[in-house]
Image (cartoon, rainbow, N blue to C red; front, side, top):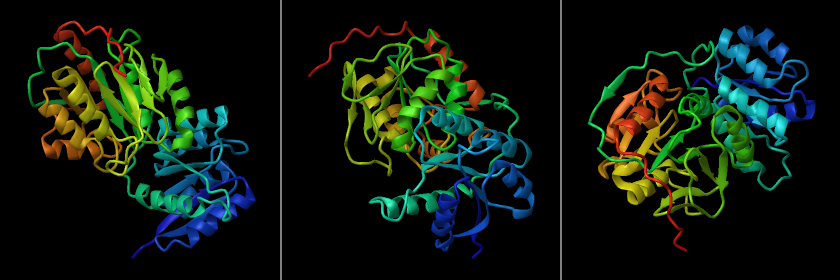
Length: 357
């Protein structure tokens, strides 16, 4: 069986050799090259023909974000950001790299003596293998796909109470497009599940606040949600909607995820019924699909990203297969459709509940 070729871009010689050791011992992978600068990576990209790139962010000269932009424009190749830093500026570069087309961000294993070394090493190799299969496309700025739509049912005649969004691989870039087009006066709270390594959660939330028109809050206990605000659960917790509040839930992983989109959508179905809007964006696997089915059956309105724009058409495809989707829309059409649904329904319900402790 052909092994997956990995190009390592890492400026630290010690860490670069460590990554070579981890990747080299995995029977699924082989080293296509290991370089210390982005400029060198770009020079050998054609000759090394990697299937996937392990990209550091803080590099001398061109940084990982700039390198990602170049690669996705000139020679699209799956990119996995591998970073040990949670410094604010480095996280900003990391999140912008995801926006530019990098597929995911992973923690860099710190050494063989660390307690979680084996788990992190296995996760790194597995993600490199999985992401190598993603068919990335040339990027010239944000997607301009024709906003085609397939309507499958009429929207309910009801005011909405909340918008739930679930995304995974390719999600940060998609979220910028959807949230950015909703506008700062959006009349609903936005409950968000984005699959991301827990140590990068705070950085993701801070970055998201700079690229969308809404404040972003990480929920740690119970919170009464406010309109025009984005809510994420604290690390390694689900986000659940209840009558009058939302909360972080440390329950078991669902669909191998915590937070899980299925948990969010199922809880929205129970709490809001037909007054819930659910959107399922790009992502690998099937998380969110079963929950969206419950939301759909409960009368909520469900939208999935269309295959024409999804970086990975896994989660949306499973929701479509289950019959959980009212409409499949290309990414640029999702935000306008959300606004159309809200304006067509009754006036959005005011949030004046008291938490039930």
